[in-house]
Image (cartoon, rainbow, N blue to C red):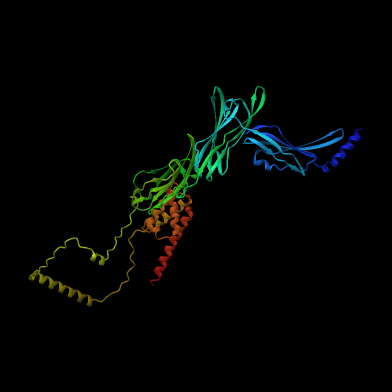
Length: 548
């Protein structure tokens, strides 16, 4: 008997791959169902299925579907073997009415369609439910890319055991979670509810009329000693999205309120050449995200070097509004004395309350830059006045009257004049009669102090500062070295050098005086200075040899 059963089993196992599907059926575990309530759709095939599954893409037109799970079973009863494969998925409808689950096909066998009745939920039944969801949008009308706060509240009246909630959706718009969810308790009509609040950031990308589909909740609550499945769906919200006005120019910034402020360090209107100034801008706006905050363009000013610092952007939700803030800092380094006027900063934005273009403006600021008293001053070269121009200028002053008067000479004057001529003749005669002698004279030794030794010592200290990467000491020694060897300030010496070394010195100054620290290769800069010294010696030698 056992041998016979084993033979039957082997025969059926060998013939199993050749079996075809006998029947394909479709079923649901609930009918009718509520709007927003998940139900299970089961598709079952009687027979062996190898690597095939039904196409459920048509379900997405009328339903919200979950992932498909596959299972198979094989059983033998009284020597007869049977196989079956089933596919299951969670399905939910957002709208009420008579809906049709389409037919499916596997291996040429089709199932029958199913008519499903979806019943609408009662609008005034929230207070009797164990679980319900509310939705709220702080603005009913939006502009393209304007940010609005969408709030979802889940009310739970019993002990929650298991829960999942889908996010809201919107066509041609982005909906992103904002912040952490909040939990508290509220009492409605004498019943205590646990309330879970979630905030979302809604940003439409196209103009037109759209609908924000509410979230869907499914879970299980404790009912005595039993688990009870519950579900809830949030109400949909219609929203009107307006286009960008045609007359708007610049970065699109739709907001209810925009404020632009600035802070100066130091606050004095008088600064010294080379002393850094930190200018900090703070831009605050309602109804936009931090990514929409535009960069503030600082106009360049002749006589100043401007170095941008890092920019910090943040956003938050408060009182049903999205608030974004950007803080940007710039370092201003004055280069030469004078009085300068920094232009005003003007930022366009669109007021969504009054539907008008407005500007966030910072007024112009006048700054007086004075020379550094610790630095040697360059001699001032007065401009030459053209004589022709001077002749054409109107004479505003009264010229003095010169009166000439002849003076009569006495005999003493004539005597002194005659003796002078006589002495001149005697000296001339002595020089002509005296034999000239040539004597070899030794070259005169200059009494000027020898600065070569001091300059060489400064140059060695400059090399040590470069190797130790001490920017402050390197900059101080460089100025002393130039004053000792070239009798020039750093600024006048740079005007005679190549642009490459000028850029390196500018980086060094920026690393010392700017908030935006830059990396400077002091060893490379030191080598360039040594090359300039050797080149200047070679030029001097060539110029002397050309005299002989």
